[in-house]
Length: 431
Image 1 (tube, rainbow, N blue to C red):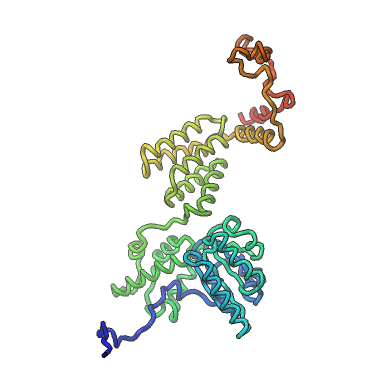
Image 2 (cartoon, rainbow, N blue to C red):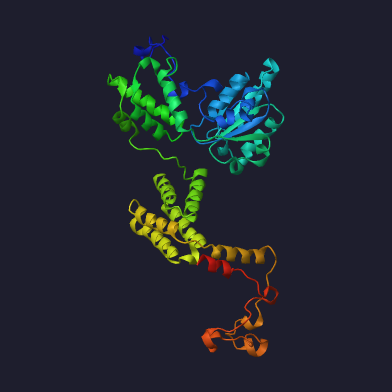
């Protein structure tokens, strides 16, 4: 039987792999070409030494997207001449780990070379999967380099954390992003140097701003702008061209991860610190990042009670009204009453007596064991036997029977007599 080509028109074409994206091609292979993270990879610093040496010590890189985590892992493999296996925890499992371990064992026997397992997004592995990695890190079969955008203290099991150094990568600064763009424009081997296009300064600054510290995002926009310019036979990439590609500025905000809690913290601390401009900024970032406005409203309500309190009770009412407006108006209109409440609460006088008092009392009851029964004169008397049979309420003094509706009387248990939860002297100072 003769073999028949299903698509004969393609049989003579050269087969080759697609050209990798610019962001992949520009990934540096040495620390000298690596931009950013000077606080970690400066000469003599621990991470640089770990990357450059054949130490078996494992480490975890924690940082935002596009900050260079994968690049550092690959540089470590290159510099130490280690076998490199990259696994994404998003779609890998224990079986994939076992394959790497088998390969690492064989390579060590044959070549005497170490194996680096780069586990991308290690926080996506559950406890059982992380446990599966642990023994091979512990016995040195593999050297683990993990990367995560989430706080390892919450997402990586303690046993694995204790065997790894943890390094915090920062969002790349604007200067580093600018250098990465310029490097890509001039690099003739891996970058866009052969295309000979120029990037107008205002267009470059827009890409830098849009990147929000993410090198990958910056290079993706640059590559798209270059491709469009070439197709239009243009030699310059203009601001309007980049604006058309970007359309909308990206917001550095992950409403399901660490960013969610960090932004909420910055928001509340700005309100507490009486800085309305900062509070409005963090409000804007949360809204632009798609945060649930009800979550924002709950932060406002808590702050109005916790930090403003009775110094201005109106703050709590305004926060409550803003929360109600979310259901009645929805976004984008609800941003206005939210902003109104934010400004009011930030500018309001502050008094944390409410949270201080209740936490002190709860600590007495739960931690110190001061859980005492209600004194007899304060017990309920709304049943027939209360006074007659048990003597409850017999010595109670009804305040309205006394001048000024006040009478000296013990309302706390005998063991806590004269216990103060509210410092009136401090309150007077605030007023």
